[in-house]
Every structure is written in C-alpha cells, then in structure tokens.
Image 1: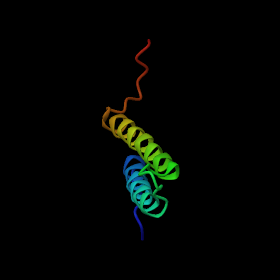
Image 2 (image 1 turned 30 degrees about the vertical axis):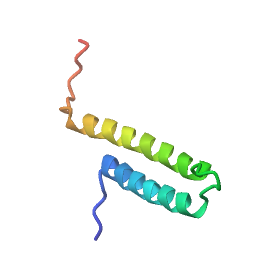
Image 3 (image 1 turned 120 degrees about the horizontal axis):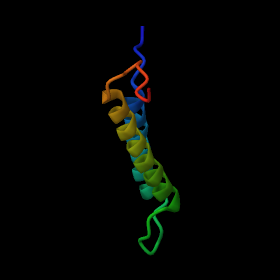
Length: 72
C-alpha cells in the first residue's frame, strides 16, 4: 500500500524532477553562443514556483487547525 504524500512534499519532488529535466535540456539544447535553452529556463522557473507553493503548503500545515469561529 502506498502512502499519500503531503502536497508540499509532492511539489518538492516535482520541482526536483523539473530541475533534473532543465539540466538535461541544457545539455541537449545548448546554443552555439553559450546561451541556455529557453525550454530549460522555463523548467527552472516552474520548479521555482513549485517550491514556493510547497513552502506555503508546509506553512499552512504547521498552523493549528481550529474549528472555532474567531470572528464572533
């Protein structure tokens, strides 16, 4: 039986995979004048966004869950 990962961990794993793919595309699609591949750069940007969302999910998970209405 597989355990369901926390959303933050899933996003971190996805970001790691994207970083690995960006490295791969940098090697495969390296341009003659030394510029990085735009595909690889896009993967890196998405990985960064995934890590930001993972951080937010982790912070939300750390907050105490309250069923009380604090606005009363």
